[in-house]
Image 1 (cartoon, rainbow, N blue to C red):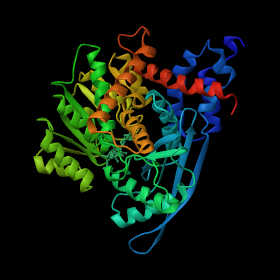
Image 2: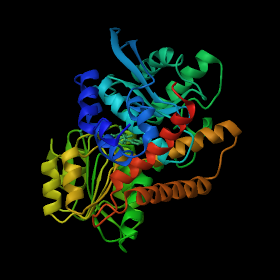
Image 3: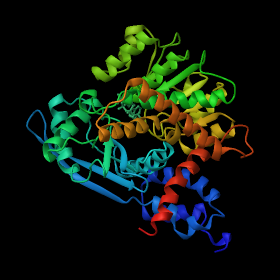
Image 4: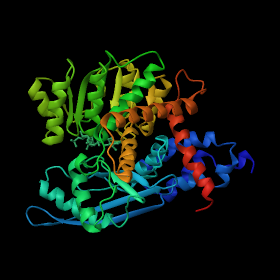
Length: 451
Ligand code: NDP
C-alpha cells in the first residue's frame, strides 16, 4: 500500500466519532495519542496492514450492570456499574475503579484507553482497563458505603480474577472501599488471591502503594528538571486536589525542598503563601482522607484565603501539578500560568489539561509530562503488589521505593528516546510517551495475528 493510501488522523477520527457518538472524553484521549502515533507509523506498513490503532481504540469488552443497595432510611437505590476491559495484549486488564456521580461510559473508555499505554510504559506485564459507578460516596455512612461495595462486587466478581482483570482505587475509591470490595470477593469466591490492588498491608497490600502515584509525579518532574540542570528545591509549586495523588505529591515536594502554596477540592482552593509544611499537610491528610471534610476548613484553621468554586491556576508558581480530575486546566488557565512564569507541568490526574492547554504549554517551551507517563507510579506499584501476592511475600518499603524510582526513571528515558529531535527546545514528552507506550502493545498484537 502506498503511504498516501493510509487513513490520516482526521479520517480516522471522523470514523471513531461516528462509531462512538457523544463520547467526548474518549474522542479527546484517542485524538491525543493518534496525532503522534499516525505520524510515527506513517512508513511502518505492518501497523497499518494489521489495523493496530483501530483495534486498540475499540475496547475488548464493556460490562455494564445494575447495582442495587439499601440506604440508611430503608430506600432501595439503583446505580450503574461498569468495567471497561480495553486491552489485555501484554497482561491482565489493570486499572482503577472510580465512584463519582460524573462517571459514564465515555469517561471510563478514555481512562481505560489511556491506561493501556500507561501500563505499557511501566515495563510490567499489565493490560489496560477501568471501571466504576455513578454512585456518589459523599455524605454516605460507612454502612452505606459497605453495602454499595458489596452489591457492586456481587456482579463485578464474575468478570475479574488475578490472571484476568485486577482493579484498584481511583476517585472515590480508597483503602476503605478496597477493603469492602476485597472482603466481598473473598466471600463470594472463597479465594484469597491478588484480585485487587491497593489492599491494606495486613491482607496482601504493598508498601508505598498509597504514596506511589504522587511520589512518581514528582520523580518525573525531578527528572525533567535535572535534564535542564535544575531542581525542585526552592520552587513555588501549585497543586490541585487534596486526595490520594495530591497529598503524596505534596509530601514528596516538601521533602525535596519545594514550597507548596495551593491545594483544592471540588468546592474551591486554598492559597497559603507561606507554604504548606509537613505539619499542615498532616492536617490536610487527616481532614480530607480520615475525616472526609472540606478544604475550606484549612483556610479557617491557618487563617489563609479560600477561593470558593475556583481552581488554583491564577496563583503565580514555577511548577504545576494538576492532581484532581480530567479537564481541570483550560487553555485560558494555561495562558495565565505561562504569563505568570511557570516552568514545568507534571500531570498527576488523568488528562487534567485540556488538549488546547497542552498545546499552549508545548508551544511556549514549558516542560510538560503527560499523565500516562507522570502518574504511572501508582499502577507500577500495583503491578509489584500483584507479583508479591503471586509469590506470597511482602517486600520491604525500601525495596519497593527503589523499584518505583527505577521505573519512573525508565519511563522518563523512554519519553526522551521517542520525544527527541522534534525541532523544539525541550523533549516532547507527550509524543515520547504516546509512541513508547504504543509500540509494546502494538508489537504484541502483531504477534497474535487477527484476534
Ligand atoms: P481522590 O478521590 O483521592 O481525590 C480526588 C481529589 O480531587 C479530591 O480532592 C476531590 O475533591 C478532587 N476532585 C474530584 N473531582 C473534582 C472536580 N470535578 N473538580 C475539582 N476537584 C475535584 O482521587 P485520587 O487522588 O486517587 O485521583 C485523582 C486523579 O488522579 C484522578 O484523575 C485519577 O484518575 C488519577 N490517578 C489516580 C491514581 C491513584 O493511584 N489513586 C493513579 C493514577 C491516576 P472532593 O474531596 O471535594 O471530592
